[in-house]
Amino acid sequence: MAFRDRLRTVRKCLKLKQYEMAKKLDIQYVTYNKYEVGVTQPNIEYLGRLNRTFNVNINWLITGVGTMFVDYEESDVIEKVNTLQDYMNNVDDKLPEVRHGS
Image (tube, rainbow, N blue to C red):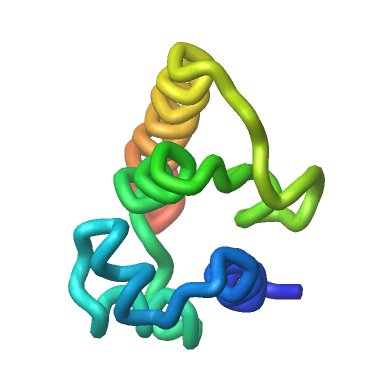
C-alpha cells in the first residue's frame, strides 16, 4: 500500500470527505487531493498537522509499519517532528553533493 492509499484509509476511517479533511488540516482542497491521488508528497509541516489533529502515526503513514493511530504525549510528538525535520534537513543538505557527484 502506497502513502496515498494509507492517507485515503485514514480519511475514510475518520469518515471525512476530502474537502472536510483539508479544512480540518487548514490546507486547500486541491492540495489535499494532490496528496491523496499521489501527484505530490506532503511536507513535514503537513505530517505534523496530521499527527497533532488526528493522532495519525506518521511512521505508519510513510512506511506502513505500526498502527494507524497513536496516543502520544505532546512532548513526544514535538520530539519526533523535530527529529524528522533534522533528518529532512540533512537529506536536503546532501542533495547538492549527490547531484554534482561530490
